[in-house]
Amino acid sequence: MTTYQGLVKRSQGALRPFILTRAAFAGSHRHAAIWTGDNMADWDHMRISIPMCLNLALGGMPYCGADIGGFFKNPDAELFARWYQVNTNQDYYRIFHTLT
Image 1 (cartoon, helix red, strand yellow):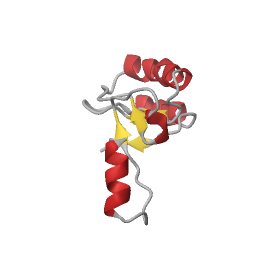
Image 2 (cartoon, helix red, strand yellow):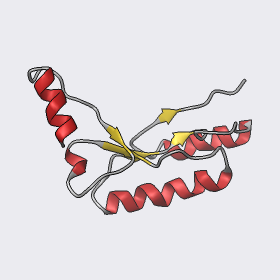
Image 3 (cartoon, helix red, strand yellow):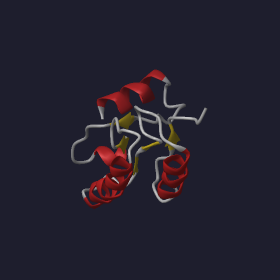
Image 4 (cartoon, helix red, strand yellow):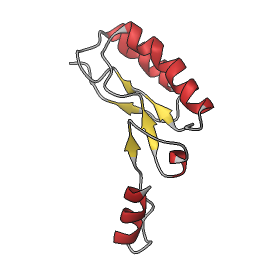
């Protein structure tokens, strides 16, 4: 909340800040989005991102998502394509990796 207020004050109310966090408290949904954190390019990490975001939404943080392709390690083409498909239903959509 303080970060949000500071950014609004710095821009003299002209900008609407976008704050992304991994840690939050009750009421943070009004000021920030949340992502699932540093995930691995792994099938299990992709699977677990779905219930993680659903549980965050039930807890009051509906704007959630995971890093597509994982934050570390490199996904194979099949995992990368599936991760794109899974995240189309999540609000926060960030592609972290590209296939080389």
